Image (cartoon, rainbow, N blue to C red):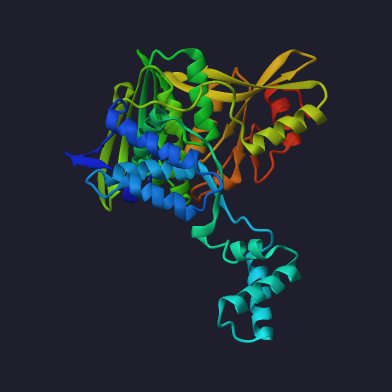
Length: 401
């Protein structure tokens, strides 16, 4: 994601308009190619050399922010590490200790003598010691890995990162999906849940409408939540027909809007395949499959229609093998009291569909006591307790404990 100092936007009539790049512009493609080569061909080079090459490529023209933004994205794909045969701190300590013993270092020969003896103390060559004396300085760290990207993909990634940087300040998002394919819709809901975003979903004449609450609704973790909203954007962009309107806290006390849709030219690097699973859920799946007899678990999203067009999407299906009956499980992400109470109210609206809510205590964002959560709501702090979920599932089916 781009940092705030690299944002290129226009403010007009209370709207934030990102200044996207034309990914087909030959000049932009040429500059992007030069930057990608700098990193791709720079393995094992010191950071200072990479930075000098980037500075030469970026220049100081009016388009400085564009190329600096591209370079930032390439830095994000790179790893710089201290490369030395021993800890540079230990190397310096050995050198300084020998320098004190041998007296003032006043010439190249006296310095060489200190380096030679100190190298022998550590068990490296004099050349290795000399090269590693200050290897832990940022400028001397070396590029040890880089995930390559082609120039066109980098320009698309820039545009997406620019929009994400604006969404980082979002307080609320409204999304409309036109006639989404079922598999893409499930993918989108899966993404919402993976990023633990508080959302309400409604069926419309054209498709589905989503309302996502943002960090202004939270008493804590607002920055983290803003990041989750921004990171969700690439998943949305994979859909064919969509539109987004976000409230943006651009200035203190002043709200602006960001509007995007499929015609904005954004291209996602996400693939709408496979499944994203949080660590807590992955652990829960393994423990359930290993410890529970007479039940099976499947991670399969199911869409449940509610009154007034509202939709609830569960994450798991637990099957009681003896009866063949299913219990649906929704893992709730960030929440506040009113949000969870609405979710619990939905359970009542689905009296004929057995659903269990699994709720993280750590992701609560406000205060206030939940008066009566009922037996089908399972709270957890660090680990989802399999037995607790199983008890709730039995209650949902009327099986008893």
